[in-house]
Length: 142
Image (cartoon, rainbow, N blue to C red; front, side):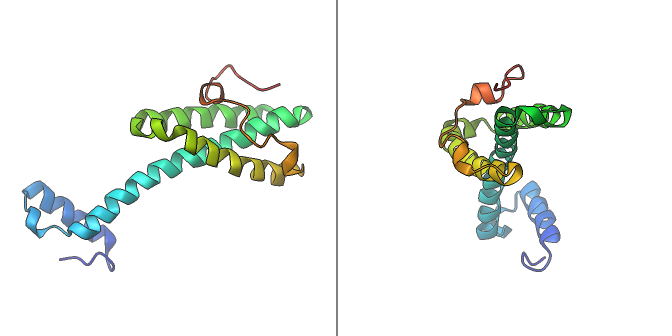
């Protein structure tokens, strides 16, 4: 048997083979549980990350109108698609969306401050947009 700590890939293949064969008593249950939980956290983090990048660019779009350009627009469009995709593929994240948006916006304020040189307090302390606006392809804050 492959060792979870020494050959993760080999371990995953072994566990898949055991599952397919129905040899449930031979599975490494503790590590399987850990990995399944980690997969769920990974999907949540993916949404948070994509939402944070999107919010940074929406903040920059609103607060630095003179610097608006095709690059920012393409990033906004791409991240909107990514956010929608992650949520479509993981609908059980929808009830957690308010908390994810809160966390993502907090990070976005900090990142937007770093990227623009503006003071963090120049941006609203709470997200000025709801998820529908944020992911609406026709919406750009003025």
